[in-house]
Image 1 (cartoon, rainbow, N blue to C red):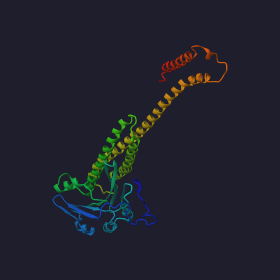
Image 2: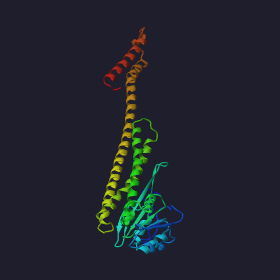
Image 3: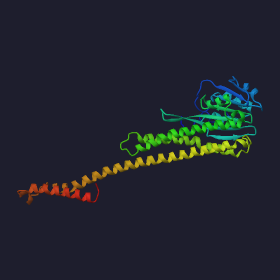
Image 4: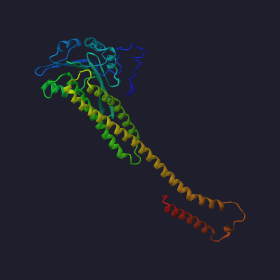
Length: 354
């Protein structure tokens, strides 16, 4: 399956809004986790059905519903029915190749983006799609598989540290987004360190597999760019705050987050330029080596052209070659050959051709 675009054959010809999971099944069984909290109270459960979450949603508390397993189309369909989510938005959530986006309705806001993870063994990035459904009193997150990205946030909620327990669902959304963006910067740093180390090898001759490595890094950087660049649009939309899903008091946090995303995007562009330069330098070095080889071969040809001429003259079958009867003709012949060679060497050195 292509990394930059999902295979859409299953969705081809279907009615718009059809709930079809596009992507790989990442876990065997879907899972729901619910965290309901106020400043003084905390409830954590794992409901069997999505309907079991409804009693915990109220104006006096914040409810965080985490659902894992996008392959469970029935669960997603039930989610749409209970929380009045349009089928087109649900369709986007089920497409793991969906471009990061933000959408709003009168009742809720939906943010779709990627969590990225760099595997140092395979030197490849993998992505886990996450969808956030925000209302005034609840936040629903949909993920392909259960991960540990948000464990520190859950721990802060349990211990009551930080601002999470004192603020609303919009601040919880910010905290999750902040964790995702920090993860982007960590992956960029890891990949950037590898790219910078590769740069020093560009000038060392006969580096086997170097160009393949550079091209591989270029692919990973492009994958980063594809998934991070649209996040700027998401945060700008949140900062504009026309719908009111984000309180004015929390806008400063999203502005700060936007600065981090801009930093991430600019860093990616820098590494893209570095990789382009590395490829150009690599090919320039190849051309330089080829030119050096041609230069040496040309010099050798220059030496042998006059020698070949004289050898050809004295290898002809003429009856009258006066030099053939000279007592020291053969010696003179070799002295002349050596003098021509030495003369060419001196001439080339003066011209700094070698």
